[in-house]
Length: 349
Length: 272
Image (tube, chains in turn brown, cyan):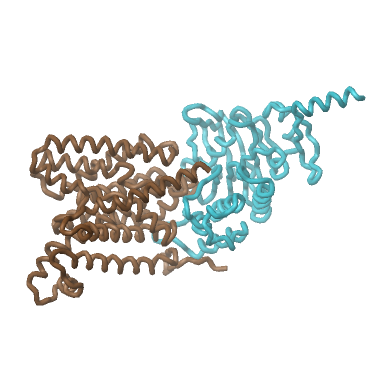
C-alpha cells in the first residue's frame, strides 16, 4: 500500500504535503481575489468587476474617477483587510500549535491587548511620531504580554482553560490602562485612537500597507520555514525533545514570529478578534494538522474572513459602517463558546 | 563502552533529589525492565537516560560519550523515547504521526527523502497499522493508538528505545499485544529496549535484565530469575508474596499474599 502524500523530490530537496493542499490553496486564492474585487466594487459609488480589474492593472476604463476610487481609496483598504487577516491567522495557527490548545488565539490570550495598549500609548502620548513606528511599539507591547503569559500560565503544562483565563485577565488589565489613556488624552489624539481601536480597516491608505508589508515579508516566510519544528512541538515538549528538537530555541523563534505578526496586525488595523481562532480550525478541517500545509491554508482563510467581514460591515447597514472587528467578533464569539464547551466536555471524559 | 550507561547519575525533580549516585549499564541488544514502587524514581531514571531531565550530578553516556556533549539531533538518531501517556493533537492522522519520527533526519530542504518514506512504511507495517494510516488518532482504540506512538518511535530508527509504562491504560489483551510487539522488535531487529513496567510478572516474562529500583537507587539488577525473589519484593514493594514458576514459560511469577491470603494460609496450617 502506498502512503497517500504529495511528494516532491529533486536532488537534495524533498517535500511532503497533504494531497489536499495545492488545490485548496488555489481555490482559496481565487475566493480571496473574488472577495477583494467584490469588496472594492461595492459602496456608495459601485464599480463593475471588470472595470476594477482594468483599473488595478492600469488600463483605461473610460471613467477618470475609477483610478481615484479604486487605487487610492478602496484597494489599499481591501489589501490591508486581507493582509491583517493573513497575519492574525498565521499567528493563531502558531499559538494553537505551540500551546496544543485549540482555544489559543492572539486576541484571546491577551497578546492583541498588549499590542493595543502599546500602540494607544504612542498615539495618545506621542501623537507626532511617524506611522511606521506604530507596528514597532505594538510589537513591543505584544512581546511583553507574551512573556507575562508565558511566565504565569504556560510553564509546567498548565491546563488549556488556565491559559485562557490568564489571557482574559491580562487583556482586561491592558484594556483598563488603554481606557485610562483615552480618558485623559487630548481629544484629537483620542479620536484617532478610538477609530483604530475598534478594529477597522476604515480609511487605511497605501501608507499603512507599506508600513505593514515589511513585517509580512520577513515573518511569513519564517513561519513557513519553522513549520516542521512546529509539527514536532505540537506533539508536546517531551516527544519533541526526544525527536531532537531544540525545544526552547525553536519555541522562542515561533513565539517571536507569532507575536510579531499579531503585533504588526494590531498596529495596522486594531484588534480584529477571533480571526486567529477561526482560521486555523477551518484550515485543519480542510487540509489536516500538518503545519507545512496548514499555515498557508489558514493564512488565506484569515485574509478571506477579514475581507468578507469588511464587506459585510460596509453593506449590512449602509450607509452606516460597522468596523470589521465587530463583524468578526459577532461571528467569532459564538464559535469560541462552541469550542470552549466542546473542549470542556472532552477534557472531562 | 557501547550502548547506554550512567555514572554516578543524580537526578532531581522540582529541586528534590530523586535518583542518587546511580551506576547502571543497559545491556545492548536486550530488553531491560525497570520496576519499583510508586515514586521510587524509575520513571525519573528513564527520563534522565533519555536526556529529558538534566542531571544534577554524574552523567549519562551513549557509546562512551556524555549525552550532553552530543547534539540533541545526534542523540535522537540513536535513542528514542516514548513518554508515558503521550497525547496527540486533535485530528492528527496515524501516518502524519509516524512520519514525525523522521524529524531528526530532516532539515528544511530535505523533508522527505526516499529513506524516510521507506522507514515510515516499515514502521507502519511492523506495527500492523498500514490499514489505519489515514485514520486520525482520536478515532482509534487505546491499543491501536499506543501502537501508533510506538511506530513513530520506530520511524526514528534508533538502536535504543526507551518506553515509560507503554501498557498503562490498556486492557490486558492490548498490554500483551504491545509487549509482544516490543519483544519481536528486540528479537528480529536486535533493538535495545528499556521500559518502565508496573506489572512484575510481565517484567519477568519479557525482560532479559530486570532492574529493581528503591529510593532512587538500584536495589538489585540481573536476570529475572536472580532478581525476582520474595525478599526483593518485600524490600522494594513492601509486599509479602510467593514466587512460583510461570506455568507457561517458567519465568518467576509473583503471587501476592495479602490479608485474605494470610487468613487462608493460617487456616490451612491449623488444619494440618
